Length: 356
Image (cartoon, rainbow, N blue to C red; front, side):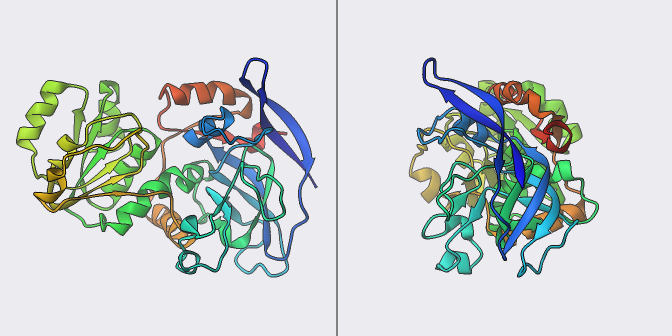
């Protein structure tokens, strides 16, 4: 079976990246494999990082994409959870050792031997994994997710990275308690999902954003209860006086450098700030933690069991990401817009209609 790919290559003469279309033969479906015809793939900032070799380890030609959904076209002989015609998804990793304490607890993303990323990683057979900017993907059943019946496939895609990245710490730190208060720093792909989950959990949600232009959408479209322009010093100073010790939780999705002490002061005694963004450094006064028994924690994506639970929660509560559907031919422009934060709130590639 041949697979059509949208690859990115590096031209060493001028260090420019571009996309090309390539055809390659996929591996044979093994007994525990699921073969998925990809219909949609979300566009994550990770796609920017590795297509542009920002981590210094890109393996070209590179096929990005780790928010993958589609239709099952073939299953291996030992597969029990999927059948041909089912809707299925694949997230940020496609393998792990399956034997360590973390894999046994369904926290495969923290596998002791390292999980195998969906793209730009060395697979068990020595080949380089290829992501969702392609027509098909073959993945072990354990790392595939059932997309609930009736859930729009295009909207399911961003849940497999952006969604689970915020859902995981929200569940770990018991943020699903109605009536509690949540602060969300940053309103991009991750931040808008934190707001949506917060409202679905019955929380009072305050959004902190440097962009005043996002205020109307935050309040009217996403349902946030309050919006604060964090780049407005006067507004922030007033806030620090009126909202000190008012928030139970904060989800920090911002990857740009920012101060932490002001946000920590907004947490109640015993409150927790979870960092899911990647600023260049985290600097805060010890008193921001000690004086009110506060906690700062980090989080990645989630394990297979919790990812499936999230998908079912979203289906039951009609939690849908806000997306901009694009053709694969637009991907270079989309990546540029993503760098400029010019998307509300997640690009999703219409693979089935544009990569033929």
